[in-house]
Amino acid sequence: MKKVLGFVLMGLLVSSAVFAGAQKEAPKKDEIIIGFNNGSTTVDFLRQVGESMVRAAKANNVKLVVAESNFEAEKILPNVDNLLLQGADIIIDFNVNAQVGGSLVDYCRQKGVSVIGIDVAYTGATGEQAWFFGANNQMAGEVAGKGLAKAIKSKWGGTADYLLLFFNSENGDLVKKRLSGMYDGLKADGINLPADRVEFIDMGGGGSDTTIAANQKMTDWLTAHPNLHKIAVGTVNTETGQGVFSAVQTANRDKDVMIATNNNGNQTLAAFALGENCWLGGTAYYPTKYGDYIVPLAIDIINGKNPAKIQTMQHEFLTRNELEAIKAENQ
Image 1: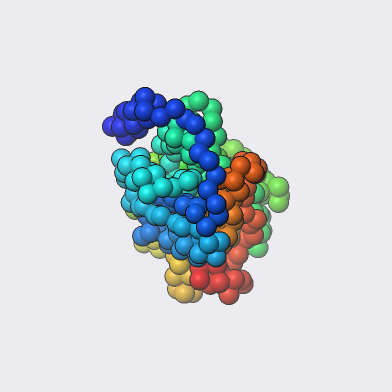
Image 2 (image 1 turned 90 degrees about the horizontal axis):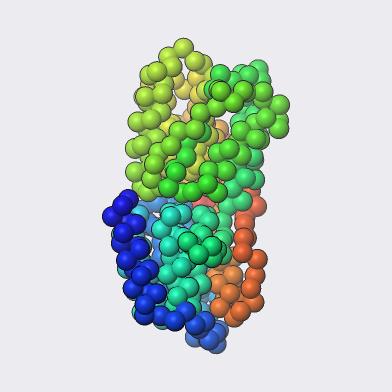
């Protein structure tokens, strides 16, 4: 991490010396170039968002130039430089790294270019905020918590031994609300679980290794608690859910656990295909629609319309009973 921060800081110093920070003149719509720096197309959600960006750019008659970091923080700034060299009038970043994203806000500001962060809030050292589009994290968490509460009432008589909440600290405090919001939703629907029975489990990074990290941490937790039989689990995304689910199945503890995720991905569908099990479902995020919102937002920003800084999706909890809706969410 120190290496990353040093690299970003060096870039910021260079940019400050070279650029005066004058605002770019707005181009005509058919001349607009949007720079999109994606985290990784190997993760279904990010791939789906990227594909929606391509479709939306075409529909809005603007050019989209794309880079991919593979969740390597050292690549984020060079990617952005490359997009800017290609004439990008705005940068849209989906690397879910609040710290580096904040540095991007200041870096791009020196060049007169705005930033939109997807699903993670980016605030620069100067206090400058990027525009945000993505989850209403608190709402998404509460919706998932209510889904858990309904299942706890139905299957466990309205009581639970523990609530485990898997998050990535690298994503920042805003995304963590997906998890704290689950506890709020659980309490709001009458599940009285004391705070000392709620455990936040940090997987550290937000990259493609989240499945492996979640699997190991859930395996360790189950091993340490062999006599608990009502364990509710909330996860930051479906990749994390996959790791938790795999650990539960390997430990033969399916009847002891219920899992609710943020988002419904192919991992959800794969778990459902195995028959009845502990994976309940998840809060819908609709990644295939992100571009329909983000591209018009980018155009408005470029044209100086100053839209609201924070714009979010609406959410609902989808289970096996809404299987067709989950399939549609992933098309």
